[in-house]
Image (tube, rainbow, N blue to C red; front, side):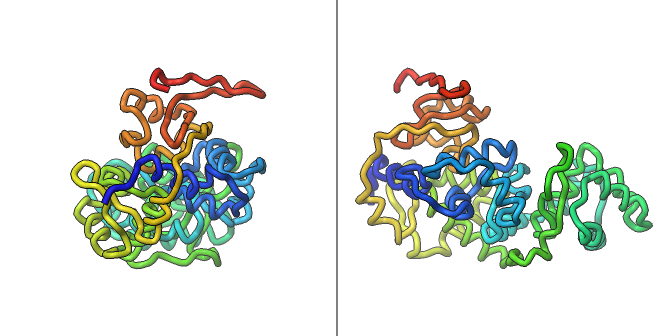
Length: 338
């Protein structure tokens, strides 16, 4: 079965809220993007703003402050903004390989842990009275007989290797920034937190959410998002895909093979191609979630600029240039083919 690429992008623009834009709760906008980078936050704000018909300043920050959204370590070790439900799925997928048990992971962080449970218990207890920064956590660990050796690792250059698994397990997430420094807060006692699901169920749910926002997705898209982004082996990702059965439909063949949700197929085929132009912030999910190597979205000659975080211009869903802001205007640098 073949799907017209231009129609597919027209459909995707609608799903992403880029065309036409409509008023949606910030959580719904974030869910549809699947993976919204949480740092720098101003780019996350812009990514949400371009998907809404009216500008609402600091909507992401307010949602983080109110607890409607959370920010946690996820893809490629970076911080991402999620709803609680999507976070529980994605973060559980991140635990699939148990990489924190490897000697390489612990050497990178400058620590050795045979049993993570005492650390988990200690950090949760520290955060029970409110968010703490790395310095405070390190100081408390230094007072703990059994965990004293971890105090330097909690503050050093490899400290995130110690904290990331606590994010993936759903123990903690980022708290409010204080004086330009990150803090962590408890997540497991958040009334909105659903807790981690079964890993394989999380994998299937994550695939469905990914395909819902970015179909038709190719093998390369799956590898970029799940294998390179969340460290899940290809074979396991493919197993989750097979588990979805008739809930997804294969399209194309060979190098063009891809998958869409069965529920979306007719709407995709009947969607109209778009000729509209949109300005997107650097590292916008439109390109960064399926990957900058996706030739349907960007010419390989311009991949490096997108990967570096250039602000992008898209027309009909395809990247056709970059832009820079100047107070009340934007300067566009069109690609030659545009």
